[in-house]
Image 1 (tube, one colour):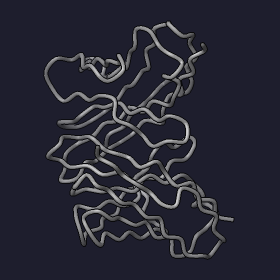
Image 2 (tube, rainbow over the protein chains, first blue to last red):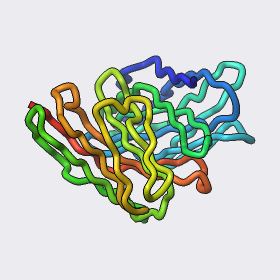
Image 3 (cartoon, one colour):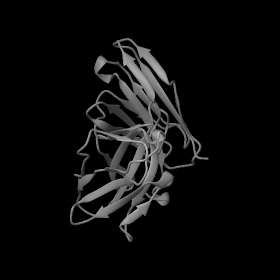
Image 4 (cartoon, rainbow over the protein chains, first blue to last red):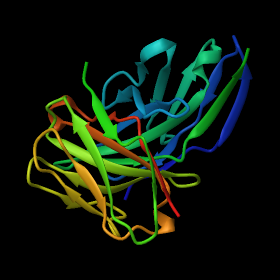
Length: 114
Length: 113
């Protein structure tokens, strides 16, 4: 069974600040790691994913995430946030077992103060 | 662009009533999913489908049924709604050939009184 832990339920920063949203996971086997964003009242939208290769992956809107096998982590970062980045961010672990077996973290709510 | 559309967006139901949540996707994806989202629990998988005619139980299937009459449509059915089923429900589609990416609908907010 995969588990996904997002240690911070809420993060508040000012516009222009950098931010890191933390994700740790446990897994057995070959997995994908991904991040999704959910704006208020909307569905989740894909941001980025990692499967293999370069441990730093780039996503949309300046987001990037770095995989660390030693730390079992996949933290999301952005160098300079904008007020429109305010949303809930979900980390997910998935395996292709015929269907896409996703396990989501509980989410981190990011508030960006203009 | 790929799209997943859910209806209704909001629903108020009475305890013991029947509720049907509908989902349509234009992605031509084989797999479709129903999740519920509750504070403190994140997203939990209720049912999923590999294609037309198939439905499978997810992690929390009790009290729910699903129907996949076509590639495009996937419904979630609450035969006897209970207040504990008050939640936000999300439909998603995906295809293993596209890697592990899910495309979500905007959600249905269900209140069971």
